[in-house]
Amino acid sequence: MTTDRAELTKTHAWKNLESHAQKARGLSIRKLFSDDSSRGARMAIEADGIYFDYSKHLVTDETVRLLLQLAEESALRDRIEAMFRGDKINLTEKRAVLHVALRAPKGQSILVDGKDVVPEVHAVLDKMAGFAERVRSGAWKGHTGKRIRSVINIGIGGSDLGPVMAYEALRHYSARDMNFRFVSNVDGTDFAEATHDLSPEETLFIISSKTFTTLETMTNAHTAREWALKGLKDESAVAKHFVAVSTNETEVGKFGIDTANMFGFWDWVGGRYSMDSAIGLSTMIAIGPDNFRSMLNGFHRMDEHFRRAPFDRNLPVIMGLLGIWYNNFFGAQTAAVLPYEQYLKRFPAYLQQLTMESNGKHVTREGQAVNYQTGPIYWGEPGTNGQHSFYQLIHQGTKLIPCDFIGFMEPLNPLGRHHDLLIANVFAQSEALAFGKTVEEVKAEGTPDWLVPHRTFEGNRPSTTILMEKLTPETLGTLVALYEHSVFTQGAIWDIDSFDQWGVELGKALAVRIIPELENKAAGPMKHDSSTNTLIARYVNSKK
Ligand code: G6Q
Image (tube, rainbow, N blue to C red; front, side, top):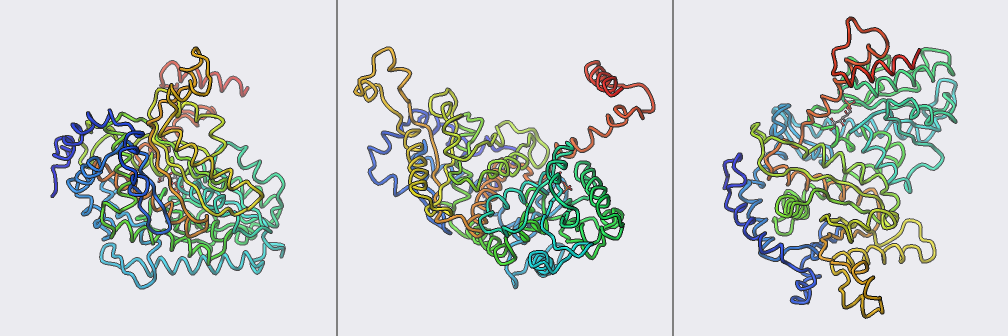
């Protein structure tokens, strides 16, 4: 059933959820568990190598039923099909949204404007693989005949966060005789620190930019060129030390990179969904083509699950709906992502872009102002580090913060008791959040009366526990796709365009007006507000 999309809050499901939420606010996780001894095992889904325990949430079977009804009334199934079919579901940019095609196996067919894109995807993957092998083996030589030891990806936003997250996550599988670095910030420190101990003779730059016009990336790319040529002293060296990943062949050529050394992708790949495209070239060089393909395979498994599993057993759907429950019916402003895996240290940063750039929207796809909350703020840090900093607020503060705990059964670096201690902490934290510590329990420990309120934990704080066997290229792919599709689920229900980013586009334009004023090249007097004018004048004076 399709609803009038501007009227989300008037749907039956939404109204039912609102009245159900009145009662649900009185739920006690403790009681839910004591009333149903099977809850822990029952409210868990196992699929594609993920064990997803959502029993420690403020939900009953009725809540889940109503949330699923919301998914149905929001025509989520149609929306999913529209994406996989290659419809132009990114309405404001009139583009298809087909990151799922980047991991479609050979032989599958996905049409964009009547053309099957899967063969092109595999042609680029093969070209990347050939290049990655040559760099890894040393067959690709630098200008002076030395092999490449350091690869620097220059890109920002979607052209940086995926590659850096994937490299850090899969560092265990990477070529240890090479360095991989990532330069994104226009702050010169980023470039300076990334290159200070490197030799241009042994360094390869990958300039990753979909548009090849992004200020930060192009500034860093030009600086890289100067840095390389200062050492190599020959323009023709660019061909051996620079490759490009872009959709903009003209600009790549203008920069001086041989377009034979360009790896392309397509306008139907959004920046924050591009780590599986040629934007992942640094990842492929680091972990090798076979591992890269197995990462794609992991993504594809989750794509298939999302497309085909019934909603009540569908991991991204359930995950997305639980997020909606707290965001829209409990007033939760944020959600924490807490990986208990050191290699996932950049995963929260990656997810911040994926979730907030996608679902930080204030109008529906048709342009009507929403009268409900959209995407929450995502944040997090790896455990156990976070436990010694911000967990205090999650446990005993006044805010409701649903948490995702992520853990792996098998460690990549088994060292004494470390892994048992790590995993004990995952389980202990979610247990403490859910069940807290009552006044009676605190008193029974002999706590003096005046200290009892301080040591009491209300509990009743919801979390999901996501367990996987081992962090591998394949499981990383599955995990990332789980979040991608959960973001899709939420965006579909909120009826927003999860695939544009007009806020980012504004940021790209804003500084352009001020740059000439800082460099004393502005045509006329400054016409900003009095604060901005004063700040600019102060900076310009300090340069003198
Ligand atoms: C991602 C955004 C944004 C983008 C960067 C870099 O979805 O569009 O983060 O990836 O602004 O853009 P370029 O790849 O064009 O340099």
